[in-house]
Length: 168
Image (cartoon, rainbow, N blue to C red; front, side, top):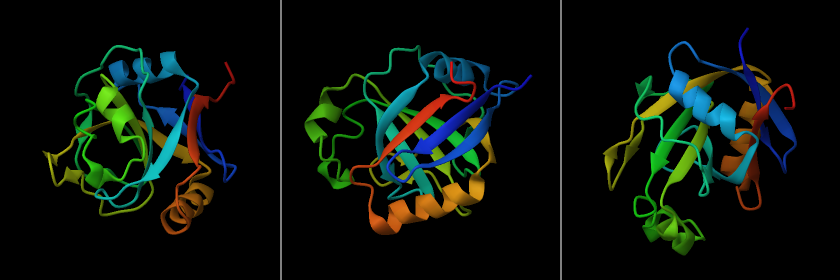
């Protein structure tokens, strides 16, 4: 039986459902599932294109390592990225909590992709492969509209919550 998660843009009150891809990303799925629920400040991708993501600075689960990686996520993909605080500490990224990011030992980035022509490249680091661990199966069109509103209306004050669909 597939494991399902809900992904919610909290301020906009829009959710979608995603199926974990246990068959191709078992370590990443386990790391995410065991940590749920997780809420993090939401941001819209600056380089990747059609991406909304949350940065979690207090992630306790083990690092899954590369698994089912891509640099060209497609619509409906849900990805895991892991960074050190120094990776995201550059003021050019625009994070208000720059000091918090530098102090973090590890930052987990959970991202949803809602459009085509995404390329995971960073001006400072080059290609940034992500682990594709889930696929949005329900509520996609509403989430696309909400993600576009994050892009045009701003992410300030928005949070992204990942939770088990069964509520546990």
